[in-house]
View: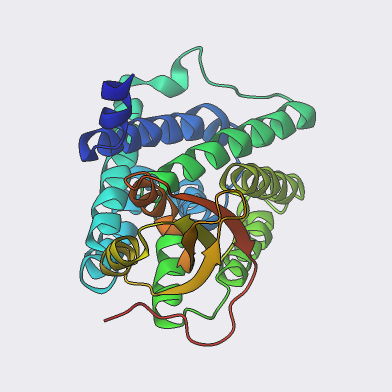
Length: 295
């Protein structure tokens, strides 16, 4: 069991997991989204509509849009995040292109509905699965690219901004555009809205909310070593509060740390290295004031 746990914390495991999520993410598009003619959320929704109009493949469009952003993310944001998101993007796009070559659209595994109820079910299924896959990719330290990378750039430039509104605006544009792209019909707009709702609810449930930050309160007997590692690794400061354990009446310290959601997994990995230490997390719905990374 200890070997499995150690492997689960390795870089190899993270990249393998991200690769698996990317393959599954692409297959959800092939099985539920493309056959039922609706646009999912975010930038992938935009490229899906471009594919519908001009037959330019989502696999190529995803690379064209994401590669420049990830090149910038390599220098501006976190390099590990950029590399993991690049891994997802390359495998997602590659899976879509290979699936087309293999003729998956003509196979019996796609779900091509013949009525509104069936297409509604397809939107729900796609939102459910992709919400799960998105959350797990974030927990591995990466993302699914597109809108999420845009949000990270905004968060880097203005940490106090809530990027939820940026994502909401892009999704609203996709939903409205669906009416005009898909032959002036309301059904694709409804399917897009259903996908967005189910996707966001699923990811919120798994990831404890679509929030700008998370607050950890850590009880430890090793505040100096732990705070030093947190500061040097995550580049965010900690506040220490002296405390006393009421059962043993021993002196302890409570570290209060506010980090962005992409760092939660790294934070948890650091905490597990220290004995006589535990932490609890709470949701931060908004941040006022200075919340910038330490230089």
